[in-house]
Amino acid sequence: MKKRDRLTRIVVGHLGSMKGALITAVICTLGVVLLELVAPWPIKVLFDHILLQKPLSPGLSFLDSLLEHKTVTVVAILALLIVLIALSKAACLYFQVFQTSRIGFQLVFELRRELFQHLQVLSLSYHNRTRAGELLNRVTGDTRNLRDTFTESALAFGTHLLTIVGMLVVMFLLNWQLALIAAVTFPLLLLVLTVFYSRIKIIVKKQRRREGKIAARLGEVFATAQLVRAFGRERYEIEQFEVESAKHLEEGVRALRLEAAAIRVTELISALGMGATVFYGALLTLDGRMTPGDLLVFSAYVSRMYNPVRQVAKLLLKFNKAAVSADRLREILNEEPELPDRSDAIEAQGLKGEIRFDHVSFDYGEGNNILKDISFSVAPGQRLVLVGSSGAGKSTLVNLLLRLYEPSSGSILVDGHDIRDYRRESLRHEIGIVLQDNLLFGASIRENIAYGKLQATLEEVEAAARAAHAHEFIEALPDGYETVVGERGATLSGGQRQRIGLARAMVKRPSILILDEPTSALDAEAEALIQEVIERLQQGKTTILIVHHFRYIRDDDHVLVLKQGEIVEQGRASELMAMRGHYFDLYLHQQSGARMQ
Image (cartoon, rainbow, N blue to C red; front, side):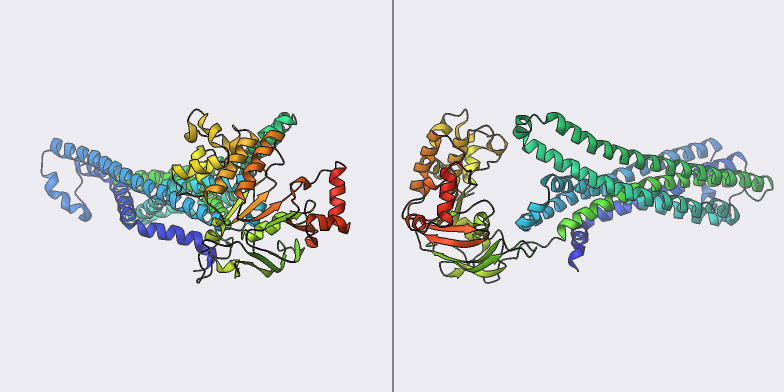
């Protein structure tokens, strides 16, 4: 099956795994339809053959033995039969709803699991161009729409459709002329529903896009709450939110107006059909060509038949919403994931840390090279420093080493093997990374540190925390290592977050260490402490250090100077200063107070 049908394959595969529940739901649906068809017949028997004493028709001859009983007994049996039909229908509806709800909730579980797994293997470039709030809205809201459609609408739609067909068949068997009068309104109903709901579907698509924008905006504002308040932009954000919400409200009202109009027109056409049926049926009854009981059955069928038609009209709106949600989910599932590991990929374990970039170039698919023909080598245990202004390609180079992106050309080797020869996950486990602003999860401190090595014991976590000078302040917290930090570590100071980030890198015991200026945002005391930890952490490890402040560069460091994606200079700091080139210019700018990024 083609890739574009992945959503269908997930749904069909899930339904196939729940055949028992699905079969039960279908049987209950057929039971509901059958009982709906049978419901008016006890009244017909009562009117025609008990009250009016008319002889049984050939089709009802099996009731001869029943009518031999006393009239009161027969009436009691018919009354009891009406109750039993209602109870049986209620039982069938209960099990139908229970089974479909069970299937629907498990379908949502499967869809969300598949979506989350797929999002984890999509390229970083996809996540960079897609807003997190929009993805959240799709994974939660759109899957919920599909669940609601399945649990409340799918078999209900089938029930109503079968009921309509069954009633029409019985009506044609009773009197084809009267049935034709009732059925002649159906083409008009279909035309009305098609016109209305095609317009509604367009509006629903706009609504879903608008909801995604609102969710994305909310996510951004909540994530940057401190910045919003610092710039006094609360009123501005409220106004922006109100603008988007007002547009969503306007579209919602338009959809509801069209839906209400469709339902009212459906009811009007249904009333016309009912009136015509009763009028002509009464004439046939007066003429003796129908019994009053037949007219009652017809009237009951027409009344009950138009109700499913009205319900189908409502369900079509839900199906439109579900179709829009399915398209949005399909867009995610159709995105191509990162290139999978090679079938013969090897584990990266106990690496020495030798790194070599061999004529590496990279672009984001736009033809504009971010890195251009980069070549350099790092010996095991050596410290490499990357220097350059913002946008020079420093972070991109590190991202390529982590296989967050693949080079457009050239190759990257670690310990003599192309990094594509390693299993991606095992390679990343061998690389520790400490960022300028370490992000923490809204979980316990123990969990945040163990994120670097999920199977780490409490002893290993504590050892890493001690090495990062974090144990003392962690122990002073109310719940120690089980203290839950705020989202992104907001309840901790910058220095505390950095020490937990260092502990997270240390607990995995990496072979290669990447440091992205982890002390630049700290005060002098915290900076000195973190720098001491880093010096100990990088002992014996190949280290790549991205610097913005030249005071961290040691004379024995190998320095790469990047400019617009190219290596323009490399060597020791003293050699580069003597060259009076780009490195020297950057140094002078920093010394004069220019801000390096």
